[in-house]
Image (cartoon, rainbow, N blue to C red; front, top):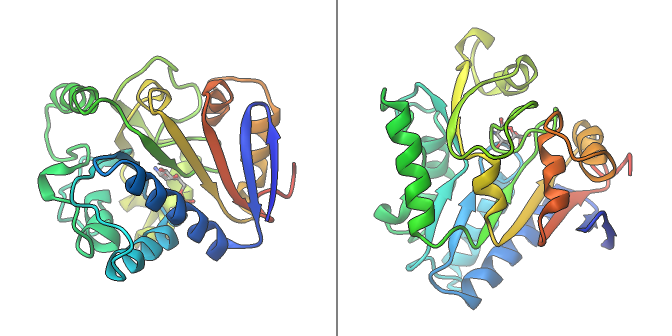
Length: 249
Ligand code: GLP
């Protein structure tokens, strides 16, 4: 393991995906031990799958208890039903919620099936604020530098909102669907404002295909063209990345 700071961001470089997953799970465990009623911001995608597996193991071994934890997921496709296997609600249930004791009413995911998008987004922002804001936000990163589904050219001041997905994102996520045409073209996402109000942020990345985005977010200018670059302006961000994702630093 190596550690380095670049532009106000703490970076932990580990050998591989497994180590990245273990480190992230250890930090969530520590967060919940230090504050039992933590508000966790959660992410989906391939990147955090191993982290959820580790957390489930810790829960089964009685190392961590999610009884008083509240969770807010970053994003959800739109429109999509929560029982659709491609939905992020389904992902969260399969990878995490069905195995641990986060109470159902404390699990929050943007509602991809409410046609009143405005109402969904405002309710989500209000719920995050009412919880006292997120204590620890977990992020992945898209190959184009997106966080959540905040695509390039996002408005930094936005709260939860409806997003038109980029071609690059649709192509990257096509691997989860039978046909590329099946990938939803829109999504609901927490905005950069919600993410920046989190007290702590952990961003995870693994693999060479993330190296360009990691380099740009750390070394490049802060710009809406590379949404993750805004994290240079947050006071408590830790990156956990493997050697391959750190390849261009
Ligand atoms: C997806 C999600 C993001 C995720 C990113 C990377 O589209 N909306 O929250 O971080 O893209 O996904 P993966 O971890 O599968 O590479």
